Each structure stands twice: as C-alpha cells, then as structure tokens.
Length: 114
Image (cartoon, rainbow, N blue to C red; front, side):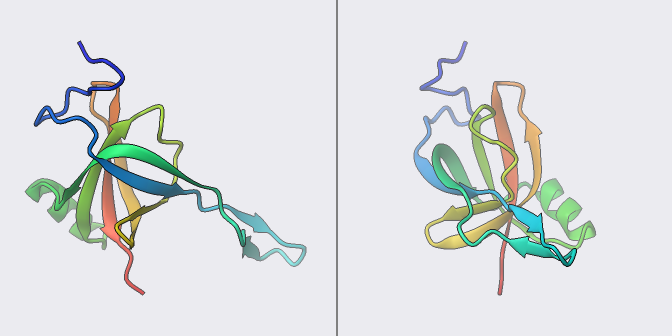
C-alpha cells in the first residue's frame, strides 16, 4: 500500500525531482485567430524525472513524428492536463500520458527545440 508521501515506483524512490507545469492557454481573438496568454499559469510539483524512455516508447513516438527524450512519474492528482513541462532550464512538451495503476501518472516528454 502506498502513502501520499512515498509512491510505489518501479525503483522504490520517493519523489526526488521538481518540475514546472504550464498550461497552454490560448483564447480566440475578435478576428478569429488564437492569441497566446502573455502570462500562462505555472505551478511546480514533485516527481521522479528520468532522462530517456523505454525502447518501445521511443519508437512509438518516432512513428508519430516526435522524439521522446524523458519521462516523469507524478501523482495523478497533481497533473491537470498541462502541455508544457520545464526541468533544469529545458522545455519539454507532453507527448503522451497514461495512468500507472498505482495512483500515479506517467508523462512521456519530447524536448522542445527552437
């Protein structure tokens, strides 16, 4: 059984990392075009951040035209459908998310290159 402070992750480590989540909030302007919010809502949560992804996940992302570079496990309650993740100054986009069955959610991330 898992407690809120100590998840049953695959390697049994508590949340050791912190990420910033940002919602991609766009609104439709008077002319019909999407306008980005100049000050999007950001918040920080604790998680387990892993550089790299499983081989199957990597190849599935390549089929979709993306390159999965990292994964994050966090509490499902903490994730509210955000599309951008920041960790150590690097911006990622959420390629895929799925529940793990332990009350947590796994986020598959692709590094944003500009």
